[in-house]
Image 1 (cartoon, helix red, strand yellow):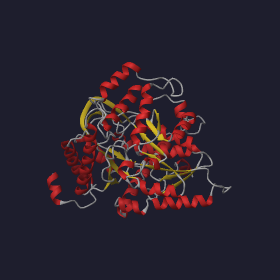
Image 2: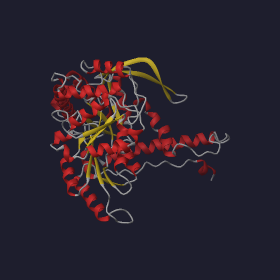
Image 3: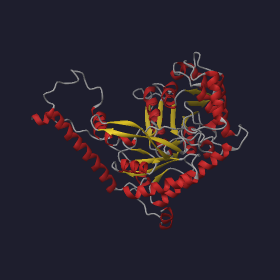
Amino acid sequence: MTLRLLLPPLPAIPPVAVPREVRRMVRLTYLTALTTFFGYILLIAFGVLRDLVRKLLDWFKSDDLKGYAPICPPFEDFYTRRIYHRIQDCFGRPIASAADAWIDVVERHSNDNDKTLRRTSNTSRCLNLGSYNYLGFAAGDRYCTPRVVESLKKYASGTCSARADAGTTKLHIELEELVARFVGKPAAITFGMGYVTNSSIIPALVGEEGLIVSDSFNHNSIINGARASGATVQVFRHNSPSHLEEVLREQIVKGQPGAHTPWKKILVIVEGIYSMEGEFCKLPEIVAICKKYKAYVYLDEAHSIGAVGKSGRGVCELLGVDPADVDIMMGTFTKSFGSCGGYIAASEEIIQHLKHGCPAHLYATSMSPPAVQQAISAIKVVLGEDGSNRGAKKLARIRESSNYFRSELKKMGFVVLGDNDSPVMAIMLYNLAKLPAFSRACLRQNVAVVIVGYPATPVLLARARICISASHTREDLIKGLKVISEVGGLVGAKCLPAEPEKAKKMD
């Protein structure tokens, strides 16, 4: 009985529902699922055993909490200590340079006493395959940088005020007008952070008597915004217009919970490019369904604006959708444009409503003027308003490089997610043990990649995420492919038969 009381409760990994179409897409076999679950169970069992031994050895010590309840949720605390800390060197790696095609990664060493990583003065020059620097504006640019420096001299580094007070400069107004023209909407409003754009705008658009229908793979900022709105939230299967129609039909028939009165408004939220998969949303079909059921469309283009489309105008241009058919267009300046902040583009009425009722506009500090100038200058380069065709060349290069890199990975035998023309692609690794092995082996050969596992992805779908930039040369891509091919073979990540001729050529 004493041992049972001392034994901490066994943390349980939340149930994972992987739709059948997703299982086919990622080539998830029963053997892979079994070994992945076994790895998690083994780590959890050892973690529980270590916690038990620690409690047995420290039973005589007084309670550090002094009667207070634990501030951290038990499972999150356990997961961080016993699983995440084992591979924490693969995350949050600091860099000592601009986030260009090549970066200086700061080397760190582990302190076994307090389980922390200490930075050293040494750096490694690595090929950067992890930044969202899609158009290569993160480093210095001959058109953008001088204008950013000039804005810093004129407006200083920050406004120290909200937009509704003294935080609006001429640059903010110019950026909003430029964004509206760029995406093809009547008006736009900007915010200091992309995440806050979603999490604060959604509650300002939909209230308690509204319905939000969200794609199951939507970003956490959308999820938090939907929760904060107080609206009823329904989820439809990822990128499934048919299931979206089923959900809409059912909810319209049922009406609001309890009273069964009609919904005041229905908002369908999707992303242009899903950042963990690199897939485009099926926007034409979704827009048609929303028109049929009189639902509003909210499109998050954080990863697609500036990166896809013939002139960089995002998935509407790429998929042939009229921007007028998308009611709210959200995007960020943090990816393609090398700046920070986000925007909402919509009708004049919606933008005016947000200016008077959105907390992020009324209370949050506005974008710093140099960041605003960077976004303005980058968009002008994309539009060709800098007097050159560099923007068109950047768009052509990232499209060509992304398709080349994706096709070569598939030829090597990797299971790769993502659509053609998307600069984001995921290499499926599945097993938890393969994540740190893949990341560390790539870093040793001077290639920096991002690995993603639970809870950012389902337990069974751990992966390495690759982001291609217009600043990558063909030599850079060949270097990255060679290293990834070698490392993938070492960790057993090649799940499909490779083409012998291509494999020989890469070696």
